[in-house]
Image (cartoon, rainbow, N blue to C red):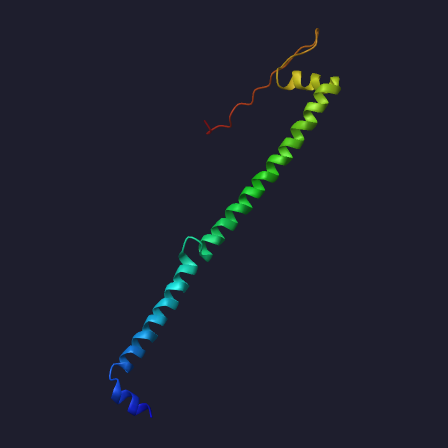
Length: 111
């Protein structure tokens, strides 16, 4: 039966081979596109890494924001916090106090 069909249409085998080849090429193209395309797996993995890094940065910024908010509250309500800031950051002292500045010299051989 198959031989009779091939005898009637000699290009049928060639068309079948071309269809199989086209199907294989299409599948390969889909696989390559799903791996390396703009929406492929490799791009997705890169985006996930970038998202994790941004989430880490966001957590760091939230922690910093909380620390700064606590410092602002302390500066508004605690006179000792204001005095500490004036002494440490501005180098101020109370009347009658002597301020000593200690400079560390670099170790020999270091600039």
